[in-house]
Amino acid sequence: MFWISLLAKMAITATFVVSVSFMAQRVGPLIAGLVAALPISAGPAYVFLALDHDAAFISQSALTSMVTNVITAVFALTYAALAQKRGVVESYLSAILVWAVLGWLLQQVSWTVTLAFIATAAVYVPCIVLSRRYRAVPMPPSQRRWFDLPLRAAMVSALVFVLVMSSPYVGPVGSGMIAVFPIVLSSLIIILHPRVGPLPTASVIANTIPGLLGFAIALAFLHMTAEPLGVWLAMTIGCAICILWSYGAYALRQRGFQI
Image (cartoon, rainbow, N blue to C red; front, side, top):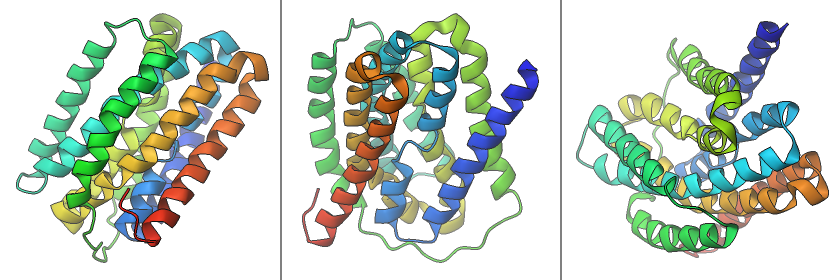
């Protein structure tokens, strides 16, 4: 029964993420980036964590995810900057290395939600400003290749597998970090960079940074309300925060505000 449940979790999550990522490719980098910044992999991961753990575990995991989300902005900016002149392997692996090193360093700190807010502001403000130069690149048309679907599905399924199998051993801190590993951004980079080119791909990734700030706010809300409100209500409201934030960012960009 355990393996059937695990396979079902992997299939459901992979289907959801793949569907959203294919939809994102049909629109421009702005919308694609904001869609990619939604919790389309972390959300299902937290649903499955909530099925196996109590509200205190989810609350602590959300705080760790909020801290880890800080370095996801650095990951996105690093890739976008390197992709201007480097190949996909060098750009992506360098960004992942930065993410891993910063992630290890941040885990040496005893975090509170106040410190997490300060770190989020200190990192996201310069990342948003510095990423502006990479955002305004049109997305060229592209054809699907036969390996797109299985590759994306495999990457997302691998995340769910690692999360479910490791959560009893790594605790809420490790689970929170694994849950927000940039699997969707990684999938988009690996698929889009060789197909549509480095600059459009960098534009999509750079456009995720404002949306990821909304995800940080949603994680803070989940951390603070998982126990008093209940996990399911807190996660539902957190998801709504992400959607409304991304819509607001899109509306402001359409009106000429460079956020």
